[in-house]
Structure formats: structure tokens, C-alpha cells
Length: 315
Ligand SMILES: NC(=O)c1ccc[n+]([C@@H]2O[C@H](COP(=O)([O-])OP(=O)(O)OC[C@H]3O[C@@H](n4cnc5c(N)ncnc54)[C@H](O)[C@@H]3O)[C@@H](O)[C@H]2O)c1
Image 1 (cartoon, rainbow, N blue to C red):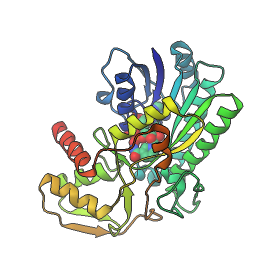
Image 2: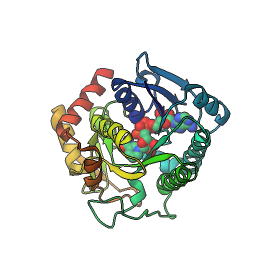
Image 3: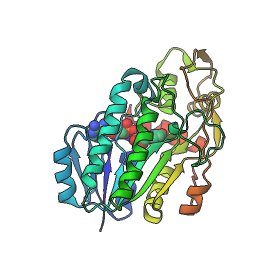
Image 4: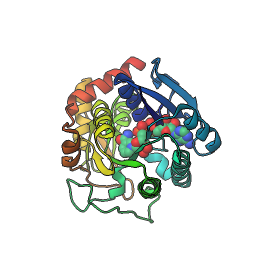
């Protein structure tokens, strides 16, 4: 049986990725410290083993777990993620994200691990010089905004992963992940725009949009993400690959669709934007299509319906 380790396994993407691997014949060892992940999101499956562990401060224990379970694939998805954190606790964001990656790489030295699949981010492209943005786009970081505590942690770790793999003769895949959404997302103020809008629509007196609503993002449903990443892990190596859906959507249109699905009146109030928020984000996905012979299939309306229904069930 193929063995994989997933860090951040109680988080949004890590929990669904673990399910995808389990459903495709893998044994999965999950790691999380519940910084943002939740116990109830962990897969219930006979081939899933879980350890509650802090990847920043428990390096020795982590090394022992890797030695014990001997995973071949290391999916490193743990991180402090969530835009408000980048502004509220920027030092912890950069420090934890880099240190946990260093600890994970250290545990991969002379181990069973053959390939590291690292969850990087489209944030490393900054305000892109071209859209759709391909993997050849340079990393753009801005020291003048705390927001880039996250992008810089991802960019530094891209280098760490690539150079470590070269030095220790492992394979690597760096995933430049664009906005992904679905059930299991955090609905607090630290959540991303889709759960934030759903939460606001149901609970707030006024529906506010940060900025003028004309900014665009490209939204990928989680099942498309996990299937494409599993295929990449099985077929590709030593690549930097955009993972996302290339259908671009204005933030105001996203908000309107969410209201339409919930059958609610749409009356947005615009509030001042966040400093240095990126205006556009849309991946060029020709590389992932070529490598996996697959592409994102879930339409935004359908994916949002599934997401809203899952949040309503939890109430
Ligand atoms: N969701 C997206 O749209 C998106 C976009 C780009 C990149 N990413 C990256 O993908 C990965 C997963 O993102 P997500 O949206 O599922 O976020 P998430 O916050 O839901 O998942 C991250 C998980 O890491 C865990 N974690 C944090 N610090 C830890 C520590 N010290 N030790 C152990 N576990 C720790 C958290 O508890 C959480 O469960 C992250 O690395 C993120 O940066 C996500």
C-alpha cells in the first residue's frame, strides 16, 4: 500500500486531500496542532492515523513519527493561513511557516520520503505583471506591507524545498495554489472570502464588501484541487505548478451569486479596501492540464451551492 503523510490534515485542504488519498488506496498519516483545523474534519477511515503535534516546537517527536510510519510522499500543507492573520500576527506567520517547513525537511533527510509536495501560494506572484499568470512569473514581495508576511514565508519555503530536494536527491513539487473553496473552511474573521461572505450574508445586519468589489479572483472547488494534486503527485516531479481554476470572477459578482443561491436580497455596502490588496488573480493552468491530463470541472455556482449547503447543515 502507498504511504503518504499530510501535514495540516485537520485543515480545509489537508482534510479533503487526506480523503482523496485514502479513497485512492493510500495509507495516510495526518499531522495537525489544531491552530485552525478541527477534529471533526479528520477522515474516519481504517487507513488513517493521526497525531496532534506542533510542527514548530516538536521536531524530535515528528522525526520519530516519520521513522515509524515510513511515508514515501510528504504533502506539506500545514501553515498559518487566513488573510487577517497576515495583518494581525505577521511575525508569527513568517516565523511559524518557515520554521515548520525547516523541521519537516530535516525529518525527510535520510528517510523513507521520496517526494515532497509543498503547498505554496499564488500570493508569491504579488500584484501580477501578467494575467493569466504562469509559473515563470517572478516572485514579487513588498516589505512595506505586513500582508506579505505570508507570501514571503511561502516564497522562502519554495527555495528551501527546491534546494533541499536537490541537495538530498529527493523529488519535489511546489504547488502555487490559487483561491480554493468548499466545506470545512474557517468561517471566523480569519477565514477566506467565500466563507466570510456566506457568514456575513446570514449573520450581519449589513453586507459589506472590502474595497470596490471590482477586484478579481479565480475560485477552484476543493474536489478539483485534491484530485489534480493527487494526479500531480503520481505523475510529475521537480516542477512548480499552478493549481486553480482559470475562470476569473469579480468579488462583487461572487457576493451576488452567493445571495442568489441563498435566495437573499443583495444590497452591498462598500468599505475601504485593505492596503496592498491584489487587484487581479488568475492562473495560467496549461502546465497542470498537460501534466495531469485533467482540469477543474466544478462550476462556481455549483461549488458555492455545495459549500452553502454544507455550512447550513452544520448550524
Ligand atoms: N485555501 C487556499 O485557497 C490556499 C491558497 C493558497 C495556498 N494555500 C496553502 O495550502 C495549505 C492549506 O491551506 P488551508 O486553506 O487548508 O488552510 P488551513 O488553515 O485550513 O490548514 C492549515 C492547517 O495547518 C495547521 N497548522 C498550523 N500551524 C501548525 C503547526 N505549528 N503544527 C501543526 N499544524 C499546524 C492548522 O491547524 C490547519 O489545520 C496552507 O499551506 C496554505 O498556505 C491555501
